[in-house]
Amino acid sequence: MSKPSTPPIHIERRILVMRGHRVMIDADLAALYGVTTSALVQAVKRNLDRFPEDFMFQLDAAEWDVLRSQSVTSNTGRGGRRYAPYAFTEQGVAMLSSVLNSAQAIAVNIEIMRAFVRLREVIVSNKELALRLDELENKAELMELKHDTFSHNTRVQLKQVFDAIRELMTPPAPSPKRPIGFVAPEEKPNKPKAIKKR
Image 1 (cartoon, one colour):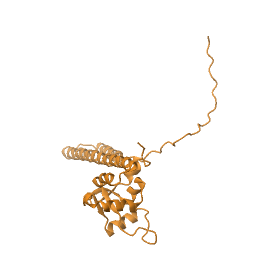
Image 2: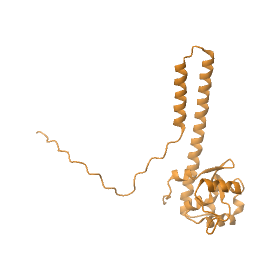
Image 3: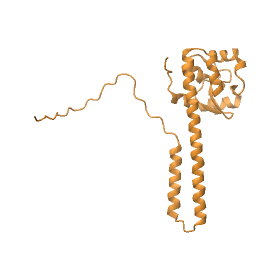
Image 4: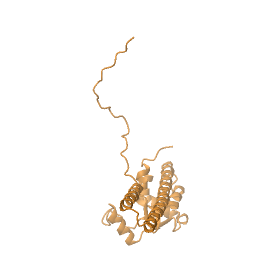
């Protein structure tokens, strides 16, 4: 089976939140599947009964304006997009694999589903961590109220700890990937070899 050409981190960056759902836009999906946006939309329109509103919806004018302002998309002039894009929820993306039945579509769909799952896991773990952090802060405030002798330094230190934990909750920037293919080794000065005594 062939590997998808887009790494998962790029897929996760293309997942947006609209109308309370995590979605992917038709143009991004078409690029991942290796088809034109119009071909993807035509395939969906031929199978509209498979795509209820909770699987796919077309952006309204306000949503489209926001999307255009946040990303570099073609203008509505000559050669640009003339209709609002479609947004596909996780279930809609899963349904696309039955509409676009190619090896690349299946491989890409598997990676997209994994990206949705990873995103859901990160959100759940951050929510749990945020709840526990709030509990700790509340307990510290309660202790502070109970004990007038609670030192100022201890309060400052606890605040620093909470701030540091919140900072750690933000996802790290992606690390640079190693180049693919042959990379010439850097030249290092030769070290003299030790001579073994017999």
